[in-house]
Length: 238
Image 1 (tube, rainbow, N blue to C red):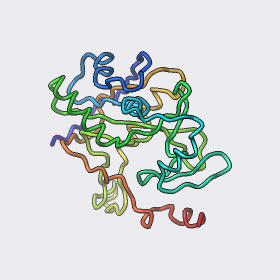
Image 2: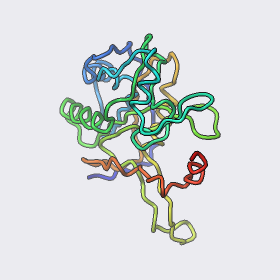
Image 3: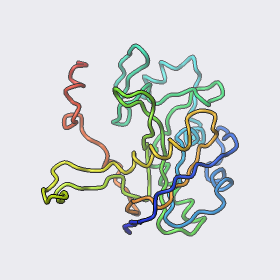
């Protein structure tokens, strides 16, 4: 375990690539476009090409059936299906047809597992020590226009920075404060990678203020609905 803290500014560099093909080798694709990687880097991969590598696609005419199968909860709304998948609220269980060449692309089967496998492959190839992988998607934030990045899975670094019990600038102990590192990095990366025809499904983050670890806790970002700040809003849906 190594805590990496820098005074240098964090840099997010999107990577222009060719079009990724379904069931193509993801490691080979990344190495093709990132022939070198430095220690302390985090490679960001959009969930779409991870899902394509896994063959996680479907027919457009089967959209509703696929969304129901992929979701733990489905509520039809004015604009979309509001769903819960993998303990997270999202639209249409993440099923998407943008940049999909006439198909539906689902989310990866297990983004944390995919990130861990990819990190191990790239660690071996480049001989790195402190190194992370982040798999991203984009989400709509309630009562905000536009989409922002979100972390579906990650490996090699802690996704949460803990402030509870630590003093603020006036010495008062913080009771609830935590920083969502993983989603913050995802938002920065998705902003640079784009959502349209930019053709930038990869990015490299350097000088990120993260703590690199060998094993991540995939549940560290999860909050049970009973403890969630917005539970009263969810209760109104019943």
